[in-house]
Each structure stands twice: as C-alpha cells, then as structure tokens.
Amino acid sequence: MKKINLIKYSLLFVWFICLLNLVFPMSAFLNYLLIFLVVAHVLEFFVFFNKIKDQRIKNFFLVLIFGYLHLQQLDHNNKNNN
Image 1 (cartoon, rainbow, N blue to C red):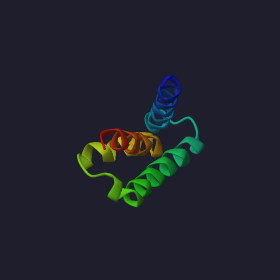
Image 2: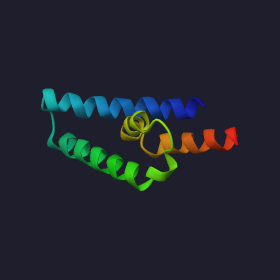
Image 3: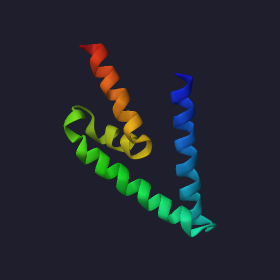
Image 4: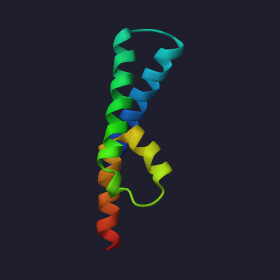
C-alpha cells in the first residue's frame, strides 16, 4: 500500500508543477506535459467508461488525476465486494 501512496503523491506533484507552470512559466515542456496528461486521462476515462458504474463525476476527476491507477483500485474494490 505504501508503494501506491508514493505513486499517488508523485502524480500529484507532477500535476502541481504543471499547473504552477501556467502561473509562473518555467518551461514549454511542462505545458506539453500538461496537455498530454489531460488528453490521455480524458481518453482513458472514456475508454474505461463502462467500468465506472457509480459516482461518475467523482471518478472522472480521480481518473483525470491518477489515471489507470484509480481504475485498478476500482477493479480491486469491485472484486472484493463480489
């Protein structure tokens, strides 16, 4: 579980740096990284739309931030509940 938390905090740090770059421009690379993250995670949400059954708005934002990591946790929780 500690490994997952480390990955989550790392992803939050990357998002923070990319969003901070919008306010205080540091690098064009970070702008491209932000665009890539948003597009990739929005596409990921729509690809796995059928796996997300309840609380779609909440799960949309969590997939937008954490990506496939959140989808794996949803699968794990669904298997444990069944």
